[in-house]
Image (cartoon, rainbow, N blue to C red; front, top):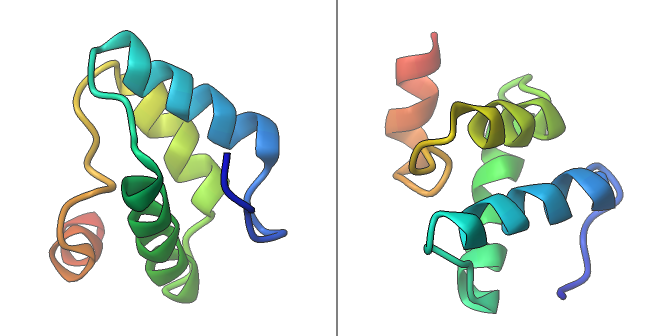
Length: 77
């Protein structure tokens, strides 16, 4: 596991990683770091990163969080 910033809840991140593993798309450490950068982009735009992880986990589909953050943020407005 990598070190998480204090604005990401450990349990939420672990649940997200377990979800990715359950759909046969586990995150390697480089992808986890990229995900944290994307979540930081969302956070800077006023979104709650933990909520986004929860929504993505509950959707039970492939993640929208690992796509280009600018496109994702525009689509959320």
